[in-house]
Image (cartoon, rainbow, N blue to C red; front, top):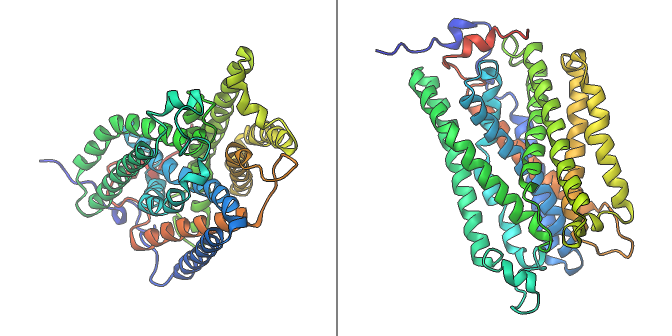
Length: 411
């Protein structure tokens, strides 16, 4: 007979297990309210106004792929912790589970992209056969029917995994069955492979296909690296937010922040590595069909943005986060996390916006739609995440590795 795992109140009776009644409700309502108003306002104005329609769609796509990266990063983080059977992360894993549980929201928020599909992907959507030889060769993949079938598959897979891992974790809170942990570990291994494929093809479909004449097999990996980096930055900030509200004390400490900082540092470097690998191979081959993508980003202020990404997405945070002391100080870690999230947003702009050139002068031109769509999607996402945080225990109550996580110490 399998022995049930001990409860949190036995291992750490001073740790607050749940959000107090009425607490954080105002924060949740504010996020959901502001997010809903910003989302509806931008969508109504964007679809009703001919002048802003194109701008809205591209601004929305940037905001959507940024927010989706947090949700996908959270789900992958949870699965990675299970497949590696990590002990340190148990006390922060529930926060990632709460973010991953918002995957159904991302499916709903995909609707404006589906509606504006022909405008976003006009370079290949609806192009007649015989007009472009290259598009004719890709027509079996780049067609509206298969595009939406793939999108449906992605969301079914992502929502299915999110429901299984989040639901299983909550179920274990009730019965403490160690077998649930074993089942999650077993599914996480093939699940990560499936996630890798779906995330890669989603990045191909929703970002790379904006320019159907360009292709890169490593493009999905670059989006994955940015997603994990953004999630780790958000996870650290979320822990700090709850800590300031009086929660997670005695559970999440400087040792856990240190590990979050180390992973943030690692994925920032990994993002740099895969982006450099992509650029170097294309530069070395110097084939016109491959260099076109970079050519779009070598004019006007886009060249400056690329330089900022080199400095801000790698060189500066590399030097800053190198120190152990920086990663163990919540103030400096928070500064690094916020800075890298800004860089991640700039990276999404760099990937998507050059295909939306409405101005005579090429380059990055910020529009109020960029801010409103981002506020809308992030407000809804974080509001729903906070709602899930309020209604469920703050950390796994009876995980077999909970005691190890509570007493975790970096060597």
